[in-house]
Image (tube, rainbow, N blue to C red; front, side, top):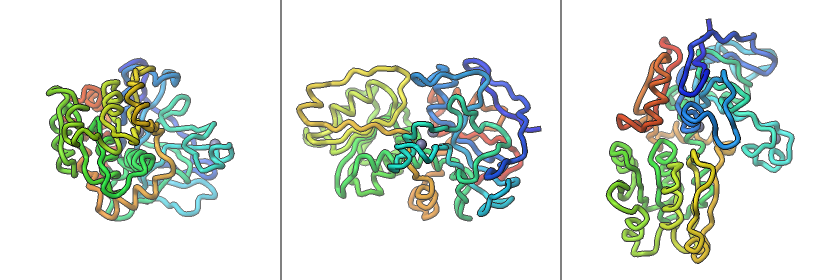
Length: 351
Ligand SMILES: [Zn+2]
Ligand SMILES: [Zn+2]
């Protein structure tokens, strides 16, 4: 029996049988090892929607998995049973204008795991297109494989900012995506990073991973703190990864003249206020980050080099039956959580 964790109403999960066909041509059957819980999963669980994308019950969440190949369908060449893989959750059409110009993450017909109408991967087994599977090198664990997708977002976000050697950056929101963006920016040559989050454990992790200084927004205004730390100039880049309006406004206010603000966090609200005069006077480029664009191989290679200590971000590991707890902890940012990971099968060694 293949059990899935099925969202049946707001914050209601049922563990029910999820029948599977044998893998079709070009597909593989995967046994799911680890699923990292994303802010977007939390939004569907807690609010039932992200903007105009509305949950239709029953649905299965989860789009950041690693797994082991169980069997392969006809025509699958480079994958075989027993292989450990990370899974790219995006399934672009490959034919539309955006796909053809190399921006398949903006595909007009994109399908994405755990985004209506496609079921996600918080289940024990699932069929996936073979092209979504990225084999893991021996030195990359299945837990790290489950962090491939958020690392891809961090790499994409950093790339959007076009960081130059020696530049400075601010990061608002130090969950996994904020921290992975920070690591990516440091790797790209950013020198000083000012990092902001209300959760103590997240600030401590940011310092361990290379932040120059951290700030608890309970203690004052984060934008003012960054301006004070940069001689009033602000940072070259600001990354907004909290999904909060306050983080957005502060990312606009703390970026310097001619700076770039990259907006990554997914808000609950549909509209944010923007400090128009500040943004205009300094000709701030406000860039939005949508998931990632073909970063999967790159992410796995970087993990394999050991230069990105991403395993540290997997702070909370949950059994499959505790998927609800994982979502609640991620939503409440409680217990010092950085990234919650669910293990749908107890018998797979993940680290
Ligand atoms: Zn995600
Ligand atoms: Zn397309």
